[in-house]
Length: 533
Length: 102
Image (cartoon, rainbow over the protein chains, first blue to last red):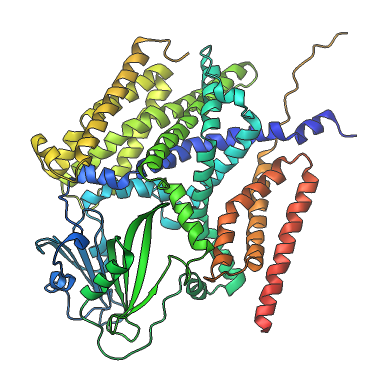
């Protein structure tokens, strides 16, 4: 017969409680950065539109008499192997051409152009290696920084994906262990947090918010783990098992190229008829890109990508044309040769992770639920800190670990919010100083901001540290429009007349609202000691 | 002599056990995904056998890890997870041999 001690060790609930606590600590510290940047990334293009205040350009499909060949006539090199012509919502028309070097081992020569689709004026021209030409402009770095923080945690690509994948896996483990440990019931879903002591209040809030956000967290964790692990772990293992490690063969199955009959002779010069044909086939879709591959070679092909709204967010259409005579070849899905269960599953996963399922409505809902999930880190850390203090008589190092947990709670709540205007400031200064790559300055500012918030959390009481960080955040948001003006070299009076409406006005008003909210929170924490129980 | 009733605190699970459960579950999940890629038909587009195991991987991994770490009967859980992994391995090897022979 087994002893009571052995029996206790076998019980799932205490084991899962311990697992929940330790994984929660790790996910709270590192994961909050990923979750918070994910919340911001939901509106990355709108943040870019607000910050960069770039002029708006009409879509080429809406321009009467627009001719792609005439637009590119002066810019197209006489010989090239690859080209990519693209236009995003309200952006200028971008053209990129790549010509392989005649000398073996030397990088290809690339040419990039930005032009106004209406006047056909070329206002930016870049020449150099593909890396130099494709490097993002400093003004476009803000959204790219948020996305890189969310996807790669600013680490090298594969390592970053593995780390964020492990965080998604940790979130899944937290979710399952949390359900087992807290056992959400209908009563718990209705219960208001009790304002008796901070530990009880934070614990009740943690259970309440965690229970209501369960479906959202499950969706984000599962789809996030899929995005991170499919290309870094599962597909390489399947390639090894099914294709003997031959990656090219696996890719030929996964994203097969539409076969083109090999033909000699030059590639077709007129691109506009292919664009017109694709727009006519797609019934109301907008042009996104035209890619030319193996141009001038036997396998020359062109792919036109268009985008249109569908029930699951934006749908991408890909039409492939023969590069020798411009003949339509096939309508190609994202994966596989024809539409399948997998391509439908991928579209659904995309829509679920990015919140585009029902358009703006689900995007806003995703942002609110994402912020609530970030708040779980803070309440979890506070519960841990208070439990450590309670166990002070039995655990010798309780005060220090409790203080560390409270410090992290401050850094990852008020500190993280205060880092937003700080990072915006470093981006604005880098743009004003015309630095090529503001990402290093932005990363350093983020780390310094978090460290400063942690230092405040370590030295001050919880209320004072939170009040100070929120106060700093409030002042920072108040100055956000001025930072945008600095980055773009505009006066404050010009701010609302530039950029794609309504984002300049909406973004500035949101910054003002955030500033007032943060300052009100800081004031309440400083003046009313009973704000936190 | 009287004894004061004390609240029994659960004996903590060792971190080593959690690490073992996660790593063993990872190996098992990868093997199960290889097995799934053999079992799932390729579909019209010829990619279902590659992508659906990728979709299933996080679910299989977390289920295996929790079974190995916190199932009430962990011996049975170990048997089930190991059995599934071995069956998947056998299916993958058999498929590879058949493909090599043909």
